[in-house]
Length: 474
Image 1 (tube, helix red, strand yellow):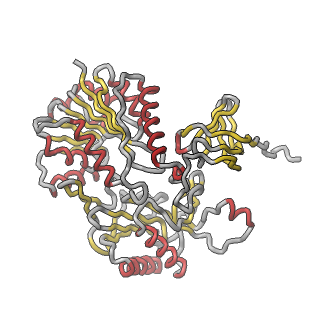
Image 2 (image 1 turned 30 degrees about the vertical axis):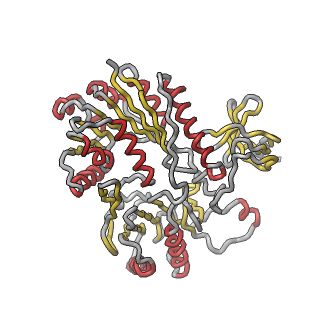
Image 3 (image 1 turned 60 degrees about the vertical axis):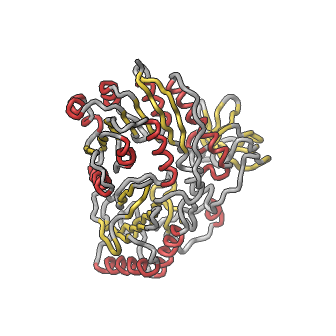
């Protein structure tokens, strides 16, 4: 017998799932150990195959259901359970909201350890499917085979795929036939490209070898009815250039609703194209989004909140918390393309936005210009380097700071400068309540949390946004 034979981990029988957990999983408790399980909901009674066993926790998958929870609902997507992108599809939406509300409360209480007001009920998304305005799909010549396909021992002739990357298998793509996160146009175009590529012998990308014509595609829709479509190629010969041109012409003819048809020739080892030239095949290299009386120019490299309708609700909360009267100097930290800065500018004396990405700052300036907003000022650079005492002494102490940092939260230097600036109010918008809670604790000596409003931007996922209003202690 081989000494390397893997030890068989146990099957746990008739285990009741007790609550939702991190990363879209749920949990149970067995012999005082926590067990993390995907694709189950609280109240399910299941047999669990342990996949990983540590001293304090286990990871497992459900192999048999004895009882289904009343909180369970039927997933809409045929790829559910394999794709992994919308792990909570099997949980009723009202229960998803309860779990996210609890997630915010647990983080602020356990990590923040600060005095809190009553947390307001989470704002649910009006649409729970078709809510995204942007999706990206990858091409691969190594299609991910489902467990069912592997068990059949069938040799598949076609291993090309266009869809989503599989977690833990960086070079494998799950072939996606339908995705319900966006308007159905995403399915129509993606499936048409697959059929065209296979019938015309186009080479799908090999990530390990960094070769192959078809790399990725991106689709953006907007509430103005415009549609952007971008294909990333890796073009190595005149023949492949001709193939790329023919595909783009095919898309232009087949989908006249595309108002911005673009492509990138990317030879790098990754799909980021911020430093790549974007070629326009049809239309303009941007589309517009609208919010109240404002228009926002969105290019292929622009950041814009991917749930347009819910972003409006989020920004309305932030603006309300800011309590602007028209006389305030506002600092908008991590301003991105200046969406929040421009959204609140009419209610402020002046808004100064700071952002790390120079291209985003250029977008922010353009968005001010096209909306005839003249009381904004934008700066590009690392937040901890730009936002310092000299900057504040030059531009003035803010009355209000709005901050919307990345998932990692704010650097200690940024928090120290905020404390030095001493605004009357801080509006903290966060996509990660855990790091937000940590930062709130660091601000607690000088600021009191007076309002907390969770907002759900991404139904069927564990992600939640949270807006907090802090007022200076006097």
